Amino acid sequence: MVLAGCGGGGQEAGLPAPYFDRSAFGTLSALPASTDLPDRGSARYEGGFVADIRQADVTPTGRIEGGLTLDLDFAAGTTVLPVEGQLHGISGAFLNQTVAIDTLPLVPGNARLVLTQDGNRRTGTVAAGFGAELPLAGERRRLDIALDSPLRGRGGRAMAGPVTGTILTAPFTDQPHVLTGQFHATTD
Image 1 (tube, rainbow, N blue to C red):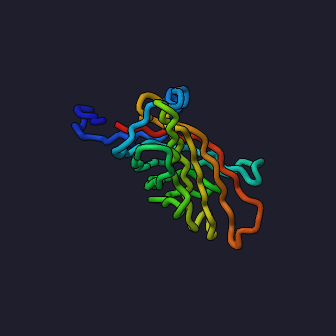
Image 2 (image 1 turned 45 degrees about the vertical axis):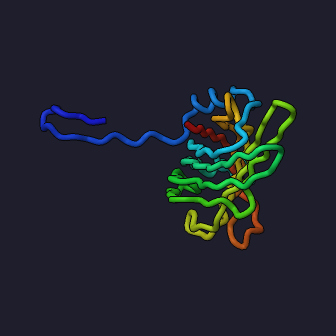
């Protein structure tokens, strides 16, 4: 957004739009699971997530949100394929401290696309787990975030579903901070 001609003739940039959009989540999560997925090619899905954080799943301790990028490759038949991607631009608050995380990578071996062929019906489900040890609220902590969704709508061009996760403090044996939320992503 550009403002001009306001007395001084200066310009002011607007804030970037958030990655997660609640109305988009509502629309995309209402789409049925796709039954006509492609049997070849690849697609990049982009979107966002939001998650509330609670100590031992009871006491509110923060909220984070950010962007999501997932790269999927499709293949013929029933198969399980790896997924590439990351969570990025994560911001919010945890224990009254600001959270700013550039990227949160996939946990190796913890992301997959499960494709199922049943006659002419072709469906798929994505599950992905992201995680790393990070300095959060002044301590070394382990942040893990998981999401899963069927591929939705015509040609499987969307996904939307739950976000779950935990934040554990080293030595990672205390009661976790539990994350619950939502995510959505689409491809062109």
